[in-house]
Amino acid sequence: SVRMGTTEALDDPNSPQSQARQIPPEIGVFFAMTSYISFFNAQSGPIPTTLGYILPLETFDVESNNLEGPLFQPEYAGPDGLKEITAFRASLNNFIGTIPAEIGQWTKIQNLWFADNQISGTIPSEIGSLTEMGAFLFYKNQISGTIPPEIGNLSKLTWIDCEENQIVGTLPEEFYSNTELEEVILKSNSISGSISSKVGDLSKLQTFWMSFNQLSGTIPTTFGNLANLGELELQSNRLTGGIPSEFGNMGQIDFISLESNLLTGNIPGQLFGTNLGGLRILYLNDNQLNGPIPNNYGSAPRLKDLWLSDNLLTGTLPIISEGEFLFLGE
Image (cartoon, rainbow, N blue to C red; front, top):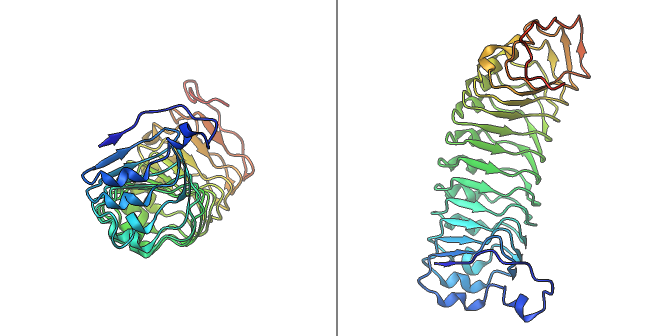
């Protein structure tokens, strides 16, 4: 293994000292190396193609450097590239290029991270061959196109984050087959269509962020099945219909944001029930909700932020009894 600790950034990229911070092509002579770990450094330049000579390589971690050039090169990510790689982490650099179809040959990969770079193109369908993958992080890139249905083959996937890309189309039904999912972060794209009722099958889900997209349709009542869900972000979409009373079954929920949609109907009193004892933040503003505020709205024991503005609510504000809203900030 080669492991490098944190170094200070160098001012002159052309200096011999700075050039020494590049990954040398000679790295390819380490035929038996299994790990190259050099995160949070000042390394610059490209990934040398000689990386492909290190056939036993399992971990390659260069997060948070100043590396640049194509991220996936055929010498190590092509037909004759690395086959033992289990962790490829390259987030927070300046890499460019696209995700090649040959990525499907990294069948042992468990962590594929390349967030906060300048990767473009689409997600190839061959991503479905990476059945050992547990974490797929590519937020803050320029990925376009749709999420392929083959994503449903990733039965060990627990964490996907593609925030701030240019993904379009609907979230395929197959996506909800990945029942090990705990963290789903798809916000700030252009994903359209509706949320499938199969979301209720993701029983281990803790975070579901799909805000700032173009979602339509109603909110599935099956969210009520998600007993482990802690954060639900659906704001700034085009969701219609009512707020499901089944939300009252989400016993671990801490944060709900439904603001800036087209929601109608009454606010269900179940949102303020004692079953949601951990709910701290509830944003329902900027919708078309009507009717009165539920009489029990003061009974939520830990509610800190409650936003109801810009709706069509009627009636008077229910009286808050002594001992209610102890945590409310405003």
